Image 1: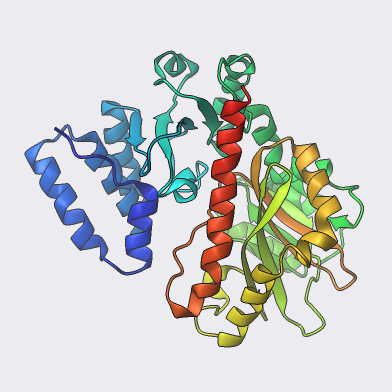
Image 2: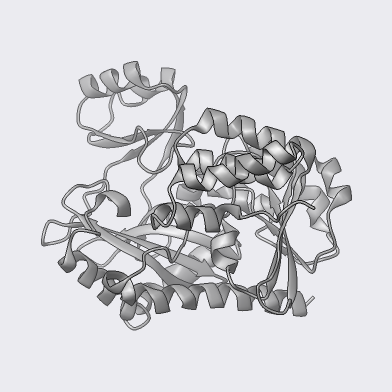
Length: 387
């Protein structure tokens, strides 16, 4: 009998916390495959591990092997089961789908990961109480999301994050969708073919932000200050399509740039993390949060006082974002301008929330993260019961 799937959350945590190195994690998976080459869960776990080891091409091939054997994988509830959640998944990298496994660890919810290639696959879904469209917005995933709209319109079980609303989270569409919300700024963003970038900027103002479509985590994201630099960027960028938007200087009065990650569960916001840096491109892993006691102390204050401070100031805007996007669950990456305006960088259903930062230095994170996980799980249970 095959062993169960370890899955994304468990593997990522072991690598992230350096509990095990990739080689020691891969060894038992390889042994399982030597004993049984049809162990699909081992193939899928190995593909996840390979992606965590920054080998995307090999990971893609390993995932193809796994999905050629089966497209349904189960992560059983760790407490007495209260809900069977079916997650519709797309083949792809770690950003292709909502990483539900982090949100449901140690819960009473059994998670069925069901990889969909065509709508015909929906005829074979396992029994479930609630369906979650985990497929994230991307050029690769758009045809799949579009094909799911009609089949899910009258689905017998409740549907969380309907595909037609996920399709609206691309940077260009969402910048238009949210542009006139009071006390909120989202820079107008245009999707342009590389041949149209320079003509568009002929009379444009600099600086601008440019990135390839579907890039994440700062990959090939640059602030461009002149036409010559834009020409140089295009010459070396390996993409045909780009998002272009004006740069907004969001440095605080102390000249630090701050980025907040907020989870919206229904209309309720929860803090995910906060990072600050002297550089305008802020990511948690490059902002020095692990090295700086002062930065962690500020993040702790943000998380501890979120409800009475950040959420109070921006509740109207957050509620309107939820109303306009019509998504049940989404992640905001955002900041604040010195006049108190909420600045939105990105809205996404595939960004990760996790509690992998452990130990005394990050003790302040545990309660807020468990709060958002608990709120998400309770939201799912309520939706299933209301059907």
